[in-house]
Image 1 (tube, rainbow, N blue to C red):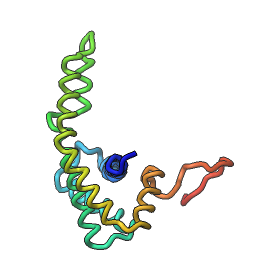
Image 2: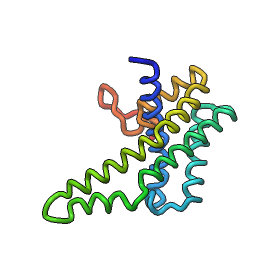
Image 3: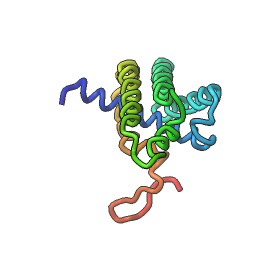
Length: 166
């Protein structure tokens, strides 16, 4: 596989892990839709600080992670622009038949948002990832493999026993 494809995939998955951290925090705060801009900024700061501590980031790396988080939030804003996504999907099935034209228009709009913000997001992740030391990159890959969960709580080993911090 080509290097840029690997980096792009790692970038997307790592962004998903970071975005998952935002989502987990936001979910505890009554969901993304209920969060103000200030709440999102506070959540971003907490997630960036947590990631910085887990990966032992220096100030420059933490700044690059902050830029990545900002790009993720911008991408999120672009994806949810135009109303509540849940309501939009519910509108597709509100009638007697599935509204294929509206579904295609919704898909096209979301695809355009991803395509428009994708290059900046990939560049931000690439800058962050490339700034990491090899041991930090390894730790990030391990966190991604675990799905960004705190510890290994709930995962079962080969013999079915529980590991991790309880």
